[in-house]
Structures are given as structure tokens and as C-alpha cells.
Amino acid sequence: MSAALDYQTPNLSAPGRGARRALLLLLLINLFNYIDRYMMGAVEVPIQEHFFPTHPKYAEFRMGLLQTGFIVCYMVCAPLFGWLADRKSRWAIVGFSVILWSLATGGSGLAAMFGGFTLLLVMRILVGVGEAGYGPTAPTLISDYYPVSRRGAMMAWFYMAIPLGAALGYIIGGAMAQHFGWPSAFYAVLVPGLILGAICFLMKEPARGQFDEAAAGAAGHMPVRRAALADYLVLFRTPSYVLVTAGMAAMTFAVSGIAYWLPRYIVTIRHGGTLASANFKIGAITAACGIFGTLLGGALGDWLRRWFSSSYFLLSGIAMIIAAPFIIFMLHSTFPMVWVCIGIAEFFLFLNTGPTNTILANVAHPSVRATGFALNIFIIHIFGDALATPLLGRIGAYSWDAAFIMVATVMALAGVLWLWGCSYLQRDTELAPRRLGAAAEPQA
Image (cartoon, rainbow, N blue to C red; front, side, top):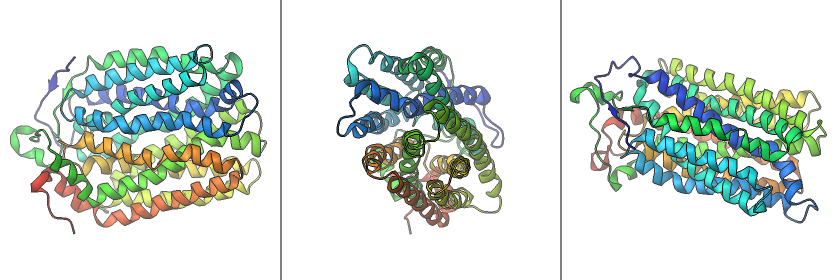
């Protein structure tokens, strides 16, 4: 099914028609996206006890493969969906994707009764397929509903779903597992996901590139053509795109490791209460610090851009370098200071979410923007959480201190890469609306 195109002559300082309604829908979908993704961390312990009650060798490694299977499929399928999103109705792709991952999430709960661990792994892989259609597509819709001057804040509202969804994933997952068994946690998000997916087929498609700098010419919206291979290769000759992607890969490694293994570390190593209480506290901290950090980062990045053209890189880099030591402090603190360290680290971790995704949108031509997000997803996950969960699980079997020191080191690396990008961002943003294939400007 193809959604109608909503072409209009844009006011380059005001949002497009239907922007707030679209942002709200995408935010709700993203919320359930991250509830599902982080719920695995909340129920990982009871799932392992269900499938591996005798704790055989490499049990933690096998549990890490649940996340890796999801991530590998997500990152491999994302470029295909990104290519489709640059050519077909993006709302239809989002609707299909949400319905698919919702059905697969519900199917994850059935593994307790049918199919065992293998079925659970297959369902997590199918969740990855669904999220691969949504991940690279949704941010490009936001880019075409809002002008460049407001994208950072709007991206932050969209990505606010990460900390809020993560918090709800921990809280809902922990509570449902404790009272009704871990399969019930997956059933809880099935119906809302199906409803949100169906609504997507009723939405109108915005004009591609209508708010980019070149939109002031050519009949009210930026001319967008079907991209060729040379157009995609331009992304890898754009320093800002390369550096923001490299830093996001390092950040994704760190965030995934914290999200997946922190409940186990708190409960089994630090003896910080029951799994349910630990999940609730982690969820509450993630909600408070993550939401505030995400929204502040988006607004602050847009505001600082008035004086610093590199504000998105500058803010993100400084935030990551501040966050890294607090992971180390967590290892050597006692309760309740452990929770304080986690909260500060999460606040600065989430501060970069809006700015870094705004960089991706601003330095890619609209003809290749969805593919740019998709390639970013592929790269950050193959070098990020696809490695993080099994690797950190394996290291943690010997020393969880060593595992979290690795997390802190990788966080600092992300900060360095983003500070490096400061000198390129203004030029890359200015060139993006006319940077396609042979027309691309040479890079210094």
C-alpha cells in the first residue's frame, strides 16, 4: 500500500503539514521499539534459568547470542530497507516493520512452551528484521517534516523514546517476570504494536528534502532523484558522516554492554537487591537521566549552533568524555553512590542522541538520506552491540570489573572521534544539498 504524497511549498522556519501528528506517532512507535529491545536485559536472568538451569559452560555466551542474533539481522537488513525507503513510501515501510516486529515479540514468549531456546533465537532475529525497516526510515521522515534549524530538538524528542523505552522495558519486564513469568513480558507489547503499525498506513508522505537549504529554489521542494552507486559512495567521502558513525559505533558498544549486563552485575556481583528491585531502579534512573539528557542535548545543540557551527559534535564529544570515568567510579563505589554514578553516566551518554542523529541527517543528500541512516545502523551495530554482549559476557565470566573498564574506554574513544569531527561539520552541512555522485565537492 502506498501513502499519498504531501507536497507543499514549505516555510523554511516552520514545520510541515502534519508534522506534530507524525512526530507523536513515530515517538510512540519508537517507545515500543526500545521497550522490547531493553526488556531482554530485564528478563535475561530468568530466561537463562529456564533454558539452562544447570548453568552449563558458556551459558552467558549463549544468552548474549540472543542479542547478537537480533543485532546481526537488524544491521544486515537495514541497508536493504534504507534503499527501499529512498524509493518507496516510507510510511508503508514503517507500518509493515512495526507489525512484523510486534508479532515476533509476541512469538518470543511462546518459546517457553514451544520450540525452546531455538525458537526464541529465531523470534529475536525476526524482531531484527522488523526494526531494520523502521530504524533507517523514521528519522528521514522527521527530516522532511522539520527545518534544519529545528531538527536537533525534534530528533531529541523522537529519540527520547530510547531512555523512556529502556526504563519501561526494565520496569515492565522485571515486574511481569516476577509476577507472571518472563513470557508475559513479551505478550504485553504485542497489541499496542499492531495498532500503531496499522495507523502508519493512513499517514501522508512528506516531500523529500523540502526543508534542506537548496529547497528555496526549485519549485518549493528540493529536487530528489533516484540515487546511483556513486551517490552512496559520497557518504564515505564525507568526514562528518564517517566520524559520527565511528563514534556512534563505540557508543553503541558501551550502551549495549551496560543495558544488557548491568542488572546481572548489580544483583549477582554487587548484591544490590533482587532482580525486580534492581530492574526498577535501573529503569527509573534511565528514565529520569536519559529523558532529561536526550531533550537537553537536542535543544542545547540547536541553541549552540548559533555561535558554534560544530555544536553537535562539540557537545557530543565533551559529554562522552565526561561520562566515561563514572563507569569506573561505579565499580569502586558503595550503595547508594553506585546508583549516582550510573545516573550521571547515563545523563551524559544520552546527551549526544539528538545531536549525533541530526549530524547524520544534515550531512546526507535527501536522495540517499535513508540509506545513510541504514549504513550507519549496519556499521554501528557490527562494531558495536553485535560484539558487545557476547564479548563482555565472556570477559565478565572472569572479571566484571574488566568488562566495565572496557566499556568506559570505548566511551572515551567515542568522545575523541566526535571532537575530531568539529572541524568538518559546517562545510559538510553546507555541501550536503548538492553533494551527489560526480557533483560532490572534493574532500580535504
